[in-house]
Length: 455
Image 1 (cartoon, rainbow, N blue to C red):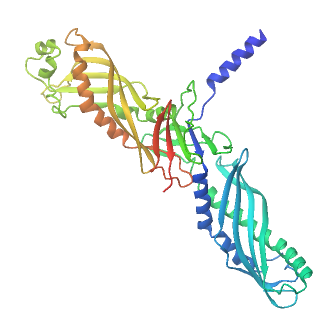
Image 2: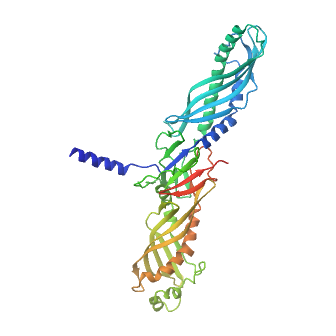
Image 3: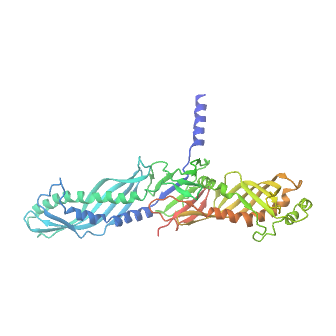
């Protein structure tokens, strides 16, 4: 009995476990770019060199070296590699010249080539919930050392002096550079979980699910996006039976963003009321005039009720949240609602008369693109799946007779209005100054994957 209970509880937990609505894989392409940009933006090595010659309170001068200055800092070469379970191993190769007066009172130059190494561990900040990099285990490794002293001048004494001097100077001078660069990188996460508007209907926030994980090929960041209506009500993400996954055929070191169909469904739920439409125009696109005379070609009873043509008024109401589905290469937007047609009355102030009310289900094929770092959707009618008559003031009729008429109406009148609503775009994660506009988009099972590209 206990075993059965345990199995039931495990099954319940599995069913209710919230899957991440969005996944980000950071490959070495993006990380190299961001760390190099941070190094360039911060000018940190030059700043450290300028600080080296300053007298600082509480810091004792180096014995045997006075008037110390650092010059000719070489352009750093940065090498990164993933450390599974931790973050990134970073090596900065650079060089510089240290000048000053030596213990004999003579001018001295020490030209060094060195490597600064550290592990940049990726963590989740407890206060903000944001990802952060934090360096640990910084070491300075001398590659070569040259001085302007004659090689035969007390070699043992000089060597001992250089060793003691450099090991005192370099770690304190160079290791803070790693931390300072990470400050710049971490700032680029700062707006990640800020609410971003979806038109006037609500917002989405990209909240970190857990501490990002590191493999030998990438860092993965899992998001549980929070989709909120304007009044503050949260729209839950549906729990898909199968969590979407990244395809395995992307280039080594590349970066991708995955947005699940469940997440896009929650975002479009914010726009549900905007998909309601009233159409009173007699002429719509390439359609015949929208009058009772045209409608009577499909339902003869309309001509009996309205021998003189009356303009049609059409109301479409979406009464279930829109749903996005995805299979490889194709994505659909499912809409369930009602379509009601009225005969307009010419007298001012007279309400139009309902002819019939149909329940309908149709789906639209979605084409995705990115503009101004927002996901854009453009739709076209895929299929009218069902029509079911609920009420009728013109008597009974077969709904199938209206299939072509309603299909053409949706294509010409309704779909353009839906596409106008969708132009608002869906916001993408604001992190690392990411430029999504160059991304290549791929529809896979239950998800949209964006293969991110650098400028």
